[in-house]
Image (cartoon, rainbow, N blue to C red):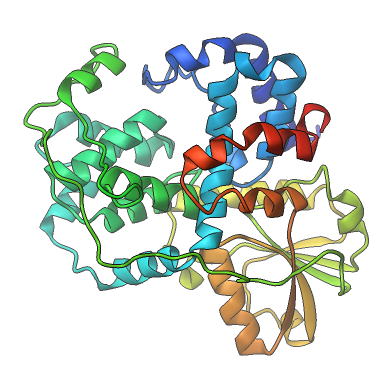
Length: 382
């Protein structure tokens, strides 16, 4: 019996959420009711971060059933992911500095205790085990976790972001890195997020409590001012090669079937941990591999490449690449193409390109353009 495609699984989750729970989202979304009760959120993040289902398809699906004013908070939350990606594209040095910091910061006993869940804060320890067992954490809880890590345990935010990136199914360079910076008070300068005992108790329905938290800490500061970087990458509007490289963080098929069929060979690169700057847990790697296998089962000219030293690439002089955004995969393909003298033509989605122009400032500016974006991209009838 043929296994159901992962896209169908993700789409069914979306349909269930849209039909049954989305109208309660704004009122209920901040509650972490435990691993057995996630009806107040969509549970789509691990699929969206790999674009099994795209942000634009989600928005379109929701707006086919509801008016924007009815579901505005949920639509904004989906657009946050697009905004974070665009913001980091405009300031890629934030990512490269984060990578350097993780290599340069000396690990100490406090970090070891934290990632083993052996601190004196019981709820924090419980969240560590939840991350390792389920590779997921509720968004509000991620904020509490990051705040406790930074301000109560006084650990480097970079190593906390690294821990998330390595262990969450939805680990994403932009959303993860910039969310940790936001909690620290670096993303919105001078405005940090502080986890408070009453807040944890209230929004876990008294399941959890925390004592002795630093609830009055000042925001972190940094000397670097990250300015906009213009004309970072040149993109192709059409395919130039017979060969295509894609990565596991953009596997959305529905709008690219004709494009994929136009290639002789498609190489789906899943980086081995030896090639990663942030080696991911075995469970996360296996999850990514299952997504790649599902993708290749639907594309006849596609093969998964885990060993990038494969001789196939020695024969290529030019290759198209589905643009993987600022992050681990983009770092890799830039270094690899330089090493192999491989000419790269990046292909970018028109939707991502359009949204990027509104991601140069804070989210308030982006939010003011959401209606314009929806109309321009035709997301009411995508």
